[in-house]
Amino acid sequence: MTQPEINFADALREVAQARNINEMQLIEAFEQSLAQAYTRNVEPEKRIEVHLDPQSGELEVLVVREVVEKVEDENLQISLADALELDPGVELGMEMEFPVDREKFSRIALQAAKQTLTQKMRETERNVVFNEYKDREGQVLTAQIVRSDNKGNWFVELGAGEAILPPREQIPGEKLTPGNRVKIYLKEVRKTPKGPTILASRADERLLDYLLRQEIPEVANGIVEIKAIAREAGQRSKVAVFSHNSNVDPIGACIGHRGNRIQAVTGELGRERVDVILWDANTREFIRNALSPAKVGLIDTDAESREASVTVTPDQLSLAIGKGGQNVRLAAKLTGFKIDLRETAAVSDLDAAMQQAMQDEQSGGEPQGAAKSAFDALFADSKSVATASPDDVQTEE
Image (cartoon, rainbow, N blue to C red; front, side, top):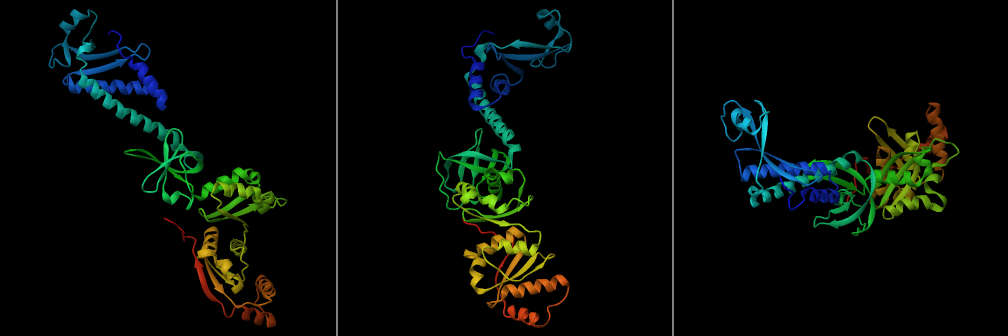
């Protein structure tokens, strides 16, 4: 067939480069779509094949017929006698191709091919996006804000595709502006009938974990370990850390000189407050640290039920609870214990009573004499004032 007026190979090549699609896959999709359209609209009873030369751009539409002894379907078969007249070397069972005149490429067939090709291009693009990001779940990427919809969703450009940032995954109160670049946590990539859906998050705790590793060398190289994170995005987070090197202060390493390291982290999160606390293998001490800046008294824990009862004096009660219960709620999530705060009467010798109680507990005995009386009086009037569970979630719609 003669060279077509339009070089389809060049046109498809440009489309492939512009949309980051494999050129040969696009040519194959074009061949299939044109064959289907021509069969459906021009010669529905015949077997049609289409070939596009990627170099010359030459386009061939062929009718394929099988060589048989006796013809039962003239659309699909040709007799051996007739075939031999056309090609003396032909044999039974072989297939012969008969080029179709270009004039028979009707407008309706080419239009149908265009529509089918458009659909296949979309499918190919979707597969490209899915394949590129399916193995990147759990990564943090830098994305550009592009647009929002009337449901409060924001869409970010990743490169080959878009990701959705729904309201629940946004930082409450953060102002997003098209064109701005932000870091997002790639939470999920899944296939749907309408193409791949990429779920991004700015509220996930793992984004905070990533930022800490980026800004703090001791965390990146494993000297300081992040043991747990509890986060209420845009408001406050608690991070429990532990140092594997006795010469390295884990809290100081995370905060940095004059707070420069932790400020770099919070700056990426809309000035979200991040409290760094010391992880302790002793559950009671870990809970005590998690409730900081409040100073609390006796802590009773039940490892089986994962519940802790914590006594706190009136002057420390508001700190322990926090605004809207946030401090105790984050502490519960951080430690994995349901925390029940119990208010007790203020005393001046709290430390002494606690120290005596801990010594008696370690010796396996009961508090004796005056120490026992002081200790019992210290907590005699306690009452439950706040309870928080690890499952409690603070959300803003």
